[in-house]
Amino acid sequence: REHEIARIRLGRDLLEQGDYAAARRHFARAAEAQPSRAAWGGLGRALEGLGDLPAAAQAYEAGLAVDPADAALLRSSGFVHRQLGDLETARQRLAQALRLEPGHARTERALRGLGRPSKGVPSGESTPTQ
Image (cartoon, rainbow, N blue to C red; front, side):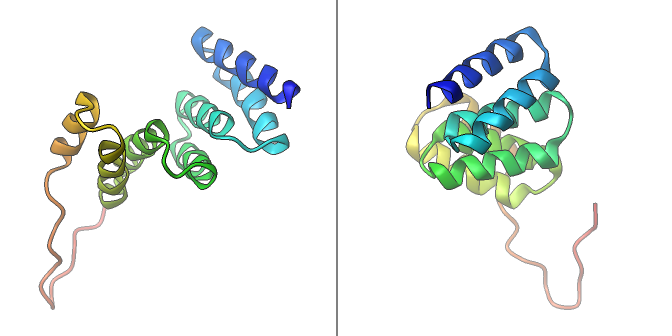
């Protein structure tokens, strides 16, 4: 357990230095050895820094499997899903985060920016593809 905590601390330091590849390695090892929201969240941030948004989304989802009530993971997941064009998941994650942290300005802005979910498409019509 202490070894994983040290890996997470080192991963955070590497994130601050912008060394996303090294941070990814440390967070991945920590998550593999002792899955935790800190390890998965750090891995998600490192993967975002490397531009691998699909893998970052998976890391945040893995963190939410460990702690589904982590507002920071929910928010990060929402932001990544928004960038991936999965607006419905983005809305859901951001709304969940806002319920846990009412009044969080950044989450409120992001949720407002997504607008209202569509009510569905009338039969016979299709949704535009991305």
